[in-house]
Image (cartoon, rainbow over all chains, first blue to last red; front, side, top):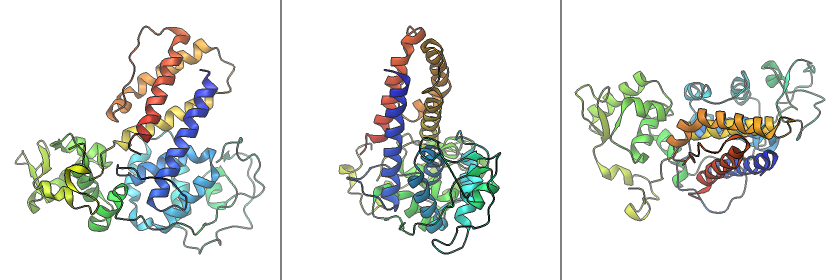
Length: 258
Length: 86
């Protein structure tokens, strides 16, 4: 198989995967079936920021979703995880800055931004070759793209879908270390887990996660094998019943990995 | 309860492979050189891919351009992982 054939297959497969994830968490798109994993919102945003440089429509639907659901996202976690992704400097800041704008739908287009010669095209020249008028927010961060506007099509994630467990936990605990710790402890089949492993998967510093584990241990939700509440020991949920907190869970019939 | 996927390991690796392929798809470099670079890329990403549950074919005897089919096989396994629970 030639390298260009591998590229086409991988590129198509990854874009298909990304559309499928976004459609299940509230982006306007149609997919058949439903995934049985839980999405990781910030990891999906970072992945899409790179892969959708070949699909401007996906990129803009991601922006719309982020603007609509910003209270479900953790900027700190986005920043923590960004270094793991091979993204150009400034791209995550541009995406974050754009979605924080408070202008209403379809009013985010500047009439005044000047084209710049030394900025990087955001989208692949294969899919977008010429930009006559750049988006000012992306231009400020070194990227040339047409003015981005909210599509207004995004919805909230449906908490009844298993794929949206992260958002259900964020509604419960807030978008931070606590909800990510719970997601890892609820779903990871490798437990009991130590603080370092949980921190790695959760995308927060080990110190933050150790504090969360101490708090959860004190609440009686988790059991830690160390008197230092998980800093050096291993943690697991005390009550397996907690794993049935999701409305779509019917015990062993829907939890084949347990 | 939904199943666990180590997205923080899987998705950065998937994006890196995709970006590398974009860079190499139209290159004039020889197959031998591209295969060598593909091997280096996979050596660098093996830990993340394995953490995400992807079986990496360890065919150290695939020398030179013979590594490209191994790379293609790993790419297929990656795509399968991203669709396996669908």
